Length: 130
Image (spheres, rainbow, N blue to C red):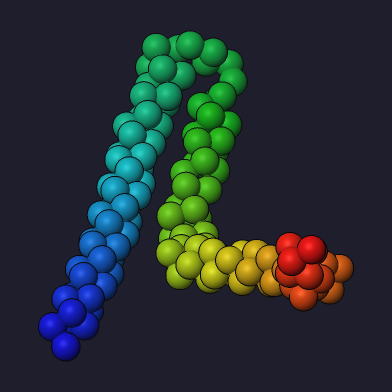
């Protein structure tokens, strides 16, 4: 009974550790996204200043295209953090891992069955006896 409690405690500690790691990873992702947003805003202002105030390429409003391209990358980043992670997060990874392990076990079982049918254990034992 003592051993089962220790085993359960270690399982809980492992689960808590895994949950903590996942939470830290999500915090880091969201922090990077927020930093990307701030840099995007500051960079956009600088692009407008370079084009309009410093008159670099003033004949054409190129900053609009640069900001739109950067906005697309930011939206892609948001999609990756909030949408993709939800569908392909830790639970999805766990399910995929379990599926692959199950397939591997099925393959091993099929190979063992094939070996046993081709080389029955009784024949192997008879050869040893001779």
